[in-house]
Length: 88
Image 1 (tube, one colour):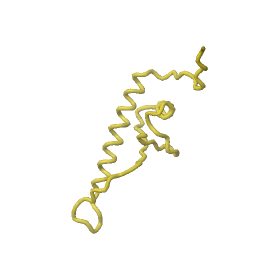
Image 2: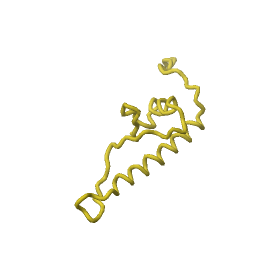
Image 3: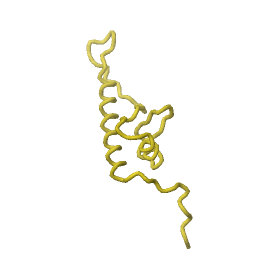
């Protein structure tokens, strides 16, 4: 029995570029999340300590938009629309 063909066309983006871009995305996502979670409230002398769920960020501009679309297509990141992406 033969397998059906993959409905998505093969990408021309090298795997090492996708790996480096994903690493840069994870680093930015982590730092943005930590920054957001540690903000001081107007009436609180300490940090709120609230965890952020489903936070989207604009990916680093070091890589073209096609790289982010490909990472979203393969499921490594989630496209939230409007140029924002998040971790799945």
